[in-house]
Length: 184
Image 1 (cartoon, helix red, strand yellow):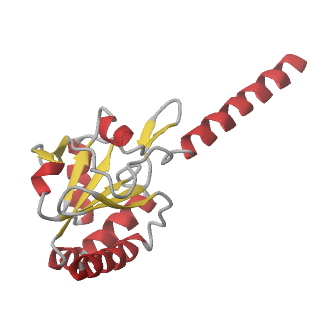
Image 2 (spheres, rainbow, N blue to C red):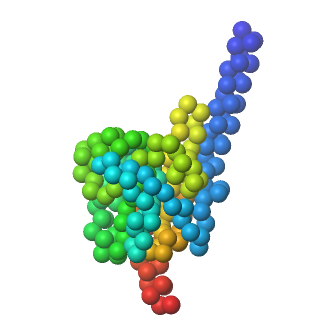
Image 3 (cartoon, one colour):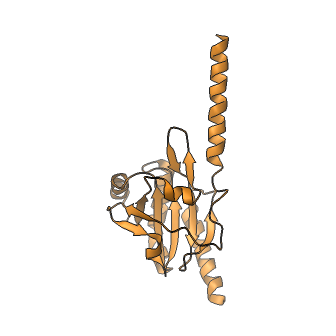
């Protein structure tokens, strides 16, 4: 009986350590003012897209944990709702998670999403943006966003995202960044 209690306590300690480590993502995320790490991933339609394909446009590169979950669905719906405003500001939205193209395609079809979702099945892009959460039995993308300017420079990193309010926050920051860059 005593061994069972010790074993359970040890397992709980290991779980807490794993959760704390998983939540510490973002410490090495690309900082503002530095080039955004380039990548190529397949979109939900199976076509490869690279970050450099979007030079000349603002990019909202958002990482999210998993298709079809409540927070991720709300965040995606809000980006979709505001898509016309992003397009007016010469911005594209690119979502990244570790699910495959087929999952993204089903998610887009079910939720009416018309922007690109990218499949980071090898976890390399999420890792390069310090947006990978290792839960021991599974790896997920963290809910992080990077606002990248038309020259490929990270202008803002969002490492503490509220899915319900995030699109409005990014739109406001994008408008401010565009206003201040126009003044230069």
